[in-house]
Image 1 (spheres, rainbow over the protein chains, first blue to last red):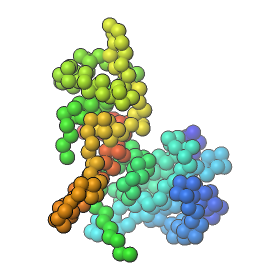
Image 2 (cartoon, each protein chain N blue to C red):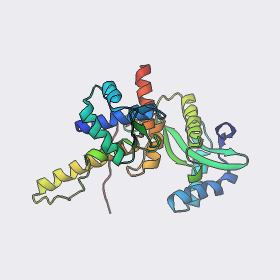
Image 3 (cartoon, rainbow over the protein chains, first blue to last red):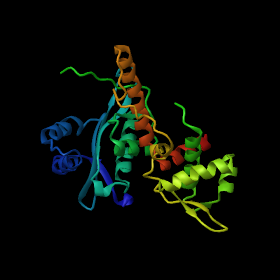
Length: 146
Length: 136
């Protein structure tokens, strides 16, 4: 399976399948959000919205960008979206997507890739851990302002 | 963060099993590898067996074998057999004074982070991490 996977930039024609993969995972379809993601991250050397496909089927997506000096942190690659249908998990799709976006980040001269995951999202946390990612030297904080 | 002796022994044992998933270990052999007391290790392995992580093989050449999925079993799954770390839900224990309540809140935050960390690292990921350390 893994050898047949091709990773490329996302295009408009992919959006419906990306929206469907995301909706199956989160229970919420977000067409406007994904259209915005394609506009902002579908092009540009520092932006990546990539999809994996094999045999004409879209297998998953990943989104990220290079961010500079956020809270004093040297430029690093940020992954802030990844999705693979449940039936394709552990088939190497997400690994290929992460490798592809990591290579793109490297070409931009960054040496660190970072992500942010909900503490209770064990599945995605475990995936990134399996890829060698460890806790970053940052602590996310929030406050209820409602 | 400190884990109990039983818990550490269980984690090291599970990593040995996961590293040789087709293997079968006698208590004595595993105890020698881990430099642990066979009596102590036998108790730990029985607990892991009751949790369905290893299976005992009876007979003269008996021992224990791995029956879990290293890509699915997390450190938390093993730790949870022996101790209840991070079970401190916010305000579970009635804290009366505001200072107690505030401290409970911070301690709960630490517990939740510990649980999330242990719950996200599988045995397979640990084996990869060990390989990285071995390579230096």
